[in-house]
Image 1: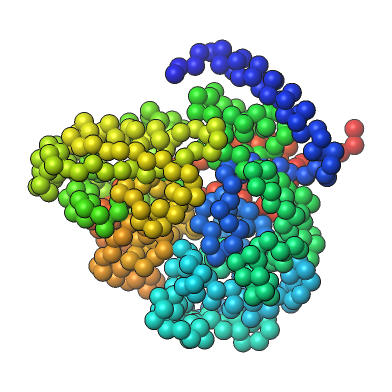
Image 2: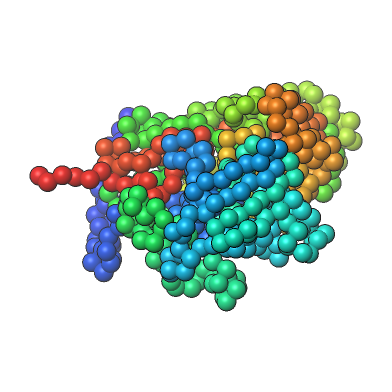
Length: 545
């Protein structure tokens, strides 16, 4: 559909009507509770707020406000800075980190946070019973991978110990240049053992919930909001800028934009919260901000199912995709089509090229695999997640485009299967799919965050692909301290991933879009991880009239 120049006028009338309705609806609510200092539209409803369990950006934004690790991220650079640890030393061989906790650390309920809490939290994340998809980020610790795999049961053999009340010693398998970044990930956050031991899986339901971060959880009302309130006992509470923050689980772009326009919300994260039909108009406004960041959209194969166990089939599928058509026709915000998975601009790394658009070669490969012209190729399913109520159907639109391309170029039939978000993530984790839409946002500015997840035992692999050569290359790169040599090893691994074996097909790199008025909101800085810690964000203080 083409929107004429009258689109903004049409939008304005609809906006006015919506605002009147929203103001009437919200008036009663605002009378009954203290208004928030800041209201943020955060996308969908979180799956969990357990730091060891979460994998999505929606969850991480909330959890980042509730809990903290040894390090945290600088809001401007997204580089690690001291968190619960005020300092640390690294041994000359780069394999031992000694963290010194701040002596004034307490839980929001008043009990002291100690080194034993750190050890407990990391071991809990590694415990196979926790089923943490992010546990692999802690495999750099000695014996951590074997403990997670159940090969050893004695947690004291894992390379983390409390030397005293305020000192934690971590022993790594090899030097890891980005280990301070790992310590800022949610999987390494410090969680309250006393509460988890008492309440088990229901520990997040307790009130008051002991937290280690800048905010407490006032409440979480499903399909309404998550309210965070300033934690006065947080070690850096003096620099927490807002007393109350509401995070709204709104997935509809139209609703999001209307709430923002009616001044019922101050910030909306994510491109998915911009109405697709108004994108061309809105991104020209000064309060709509676009930026490149370390995020990739790609397709996962389930290589445990035939015929996708054949690399030639997977290569044929990759070669039959016109990615330029997808970004121009569907995404339309300046996304960059790609044949590799590590985003351009990642620190100290340049990716090798993967498979481009070559239908003739795709057809040859499919024929060599036993399916000339698509003959005899079984019907299969492409799985994608449903949008939130009223949300844009970008995943569905991409799926339809892929369906048409593969039909036209390869002569094959694909069925589409849309799943509600929670069921979708479960299906991915359990390999209950043939092909699946996927995405990944970098956890830190290093190629490893994109490449290590496809090692055989990583919980975020979700393809069933296991390759000993790839695992060895990633391990070798991790042990390498020379940046140039490390880059070459990673390049060999990525070539194996996107050219030779192809358990995934990279489609494009994300362009971020969020909207907020810089004259009213401060503390949000553009960075390559699109990471914006909540404690720094606030409304501009207005002086007396």
